Figure 1 (cartoon, rainbow, N blue to C red):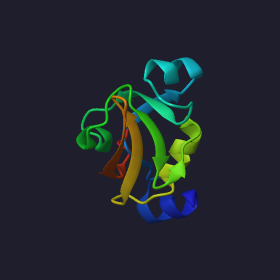
Figure 2: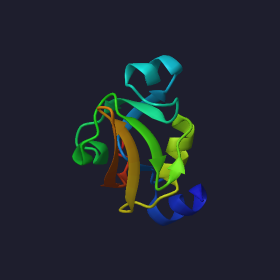
Figure 3: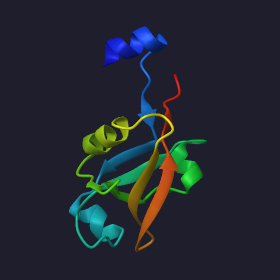
Figure 4: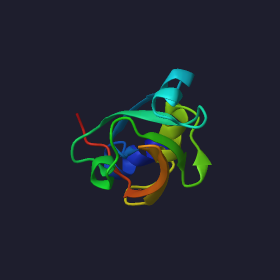
Length: 112
């Protein structure tokens, strides 16, 4: 796949939504009043990213991507990378003691 992308585009195109995330521990789940330990916590939302445009904030917990459970930062990255640039993605997010659905479009990871 990478070789095909290099041949086609001259570079590897990486889908991204623009969040840095961490593991949800029992302590984190209690702190954000999450009913169970799951998902990934948003540590940082990158400026001008799809996540920022969609309204994600530091402290939000991403639980699902298009109905698929998120168990770790790695699983979250794999779920996002399985999409193409421009795809619409639905996230289930625990934010301010409420479960919400957030939709955003996957963009190409900026270089640098």
